Length: 607
Image (cartoon, rainbow, N blue to C red; front, top):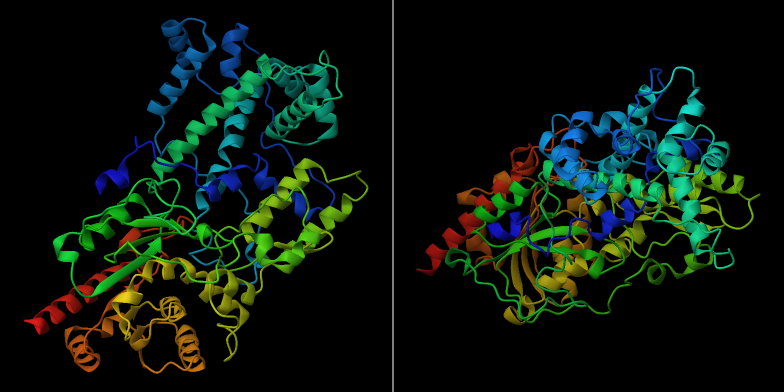
């Protein structure tokens, strides 16, 4: 168990799951998209640093290349003394020194440096603490590369000659990195007021484009292994190391790759999966607990310990539908004989929304949505994107790369669809219902607002994923099942069991939100359920006496299922990410308390 949760050296660990990779593909200008989309047609941003005047120290070119990357002179001297003038060995030594010297307290907080691209009035509902739970690391990491280059920029410019203008100092800096002065001058002319990171990206992209141009003579093509490219690669290596340190500093659980748990319908795990449950976890009732996978590492260790030391099963719902949803599950269900719900849901965006193909630009390479959220992008954002693209209509062919990437960042962040020429729109509630496996209009009506619909759906189970795990119960309970559903939400567990064809004899549902309780009650009536639905609004009402009464009334529970609030676990919550000690996420201990009571009461009834 401990090995799976904390094995930093495990080769099966994937540092960057697909959600992260999608956002990390965005260049270091990600957060400039805010400026780009506010000012349609303008797609450059201001430099992050101001030049200061001082004298340029006289140093060898070998030493200078590391100084401009932000390394202290003392460390450079020490690295050269140990390794000689070998660029690769010196860089490795400097990175090692940096890793040893850095501590979380020394690293600047990115949240104070970055302005959010979407302000609070840009979403149709307020940011929920569960927002972007699967992607918060990429948002914070995306600034690392800029910070690396900006620190080098400032280090060099602060040592610059007082006789040079800011433009001349920037040109000198780029030339020192190995870029031809002519190329640097052209980049600065075309990308006026751009940051150093953007200028470097612009020139690298131009070099790679010429390298791939089959009509360009070989003697004109740039050599990508030249000094400038190597130095740029060194910067990227440093940024990559910082990103990995950021993961450890956040104490985030290391996720397996691929995230398929004990197997999914489209992909099986290598070899035969076997697991041995602890003795105290065996026996009725079956239980099933769910929460966000990207909780701090110590949280899942604690969840496992309180739930009989059962190893969590981490699954990304992208293997079941057209959107990602990384979740961890702790349960004592059998894992043999699982089967998926039929018909299989659409597995890609274009399968789910075929009419969007007509308008989908070739540079939007998304195949699946990111995690479906509790809020959506606003009409103002969609309008900015439209204006930005219309301003680019004078360009021959596609919009400039920087515009494409800024817009693609927003499309990924808010799960936007292309619904017309230059037109994007957020998913409608019924479209979110379809992606999550709920029946159409499941959350519609009864005075429920659109905002509440998005919030309820964003906090729900992905039905197809949960149904795959619960499918083993169909043969075990052919005459029906009694369920204790804690933190029921909009009834994802009940819908999954119903779609599997398992009769719901008795369901005791506990849900704080009146809106969600009404949704479950409405679904129960519309599907003509023959069993009994008993609901409570507070898990703390279920003490020993009340549970004994319920067990006597329904004859015991076959399944205890639920997922306590993740508000204090998600990485997007920078205010009160207090783990299981947080006000809302501490309700996990009520799940444990109730499960233990049910097991104890039912065990005493069997004696």
